[in-house]
Image (tube, rainbow, N blue to C red; front, side, top):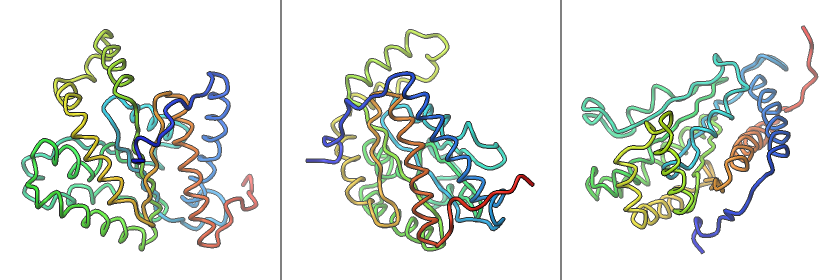
Length: 256
């Protein structure tokens, strides 16, 4: 079975259950983020935290990112969104434009769309030559492996929804004057190429899932479930990284 076909899209949470679980996960994330930043605990900077978001159009990336960062002090996290490369950016290697936003020790960055555009939209739409996007799988894995070797905790999400749910969300956005701006002609064109994008996503998951950067495919049909899953997964990744380094995730805290 493919990674996408194997996702249980029926996963869901009730409103109150989701509220309680999200609050608990956000509280844990706040603790871990302050620990990584040296604001609590022994005061030493922890490893960089880099969270990557990819997914179908209208799959809930924005909502998940909002819930991930809303409990954090804005000084302690950077959110960067990447659209099509500019004319100047196209003059450089495709990975060049991402370097300035990568976090250093004690830092955290969240990327809304990433270097995986090379093997997704640039592949399907023909914006990159075939030899270039085929070469990109290895270049991406090399980059992520290098970042991990330098200490980066890397968390990668693919937000997955069915074509039926995607259509429902498209139509809902189209009918709401305050959300219609989110829906573009390009979104509809991409939807028409769902089969081609599915092939590209599956190959991406297969070829760029590695020990230093595992893919987490989120069942995003239910937004409440997806948001809790995202925050919990980031917390678990931090806890594993700290344990691997022999760092206590729950050191004695002082009120100052």
